[in-house]
Length: 250
Image 1 (cartoon, rainbow, N blue to C red):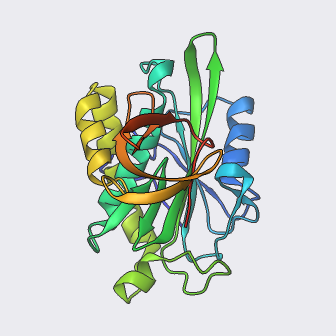
Image 2: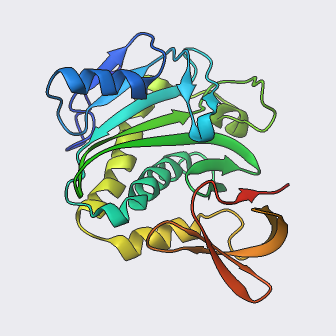
């Protein structure tokens, strides 16, 4: 059973354990509508039936093998124009945690975590906005830890990478500490440092690859701007793309 961590200041107070649910994001949204919930509350399950990912995809997760959880945040200090920094801090927190076991983890824009071309983690952030302010956001995380077999050949897990299982209960507090570290930087307004960290782990950064928008083209990722748009240089022109406007062609 997951317990409230003792070393974090914000994240995990409390940890709300859901034995099974369709989606931790959906269940978290239902709970916070009915009663007050502390910022930093974690909703975690061992068996997620219908986890949701980006672009309407489902997240595959074998029961009792991986981390599937949602974080409840109230980033009222954050300007709406800077919403992409929520993607940055969660991505970097996951990379920091995974890098304790092995080097080589990267962020595939906007916020999927990959290792040598295979996906190990996905993030789904759902914001509630009123006027010009964040009311709250629910951050869904799927992180493959001990699962060995996947229907999708492009998926992997930490145990497959390092050759051994890890204790989900014992390692969870460290994961929350790593996520909290980057959330603290965001609270402190360390935008440049966060952007620099993200660029250092951005997959295909400064490498020529093919992309697909209205057509397939070759370009080089030059980073992201303050709004989270992907910057790709092609034929000496710097182009800016929002999420879903460009795909990574194989």
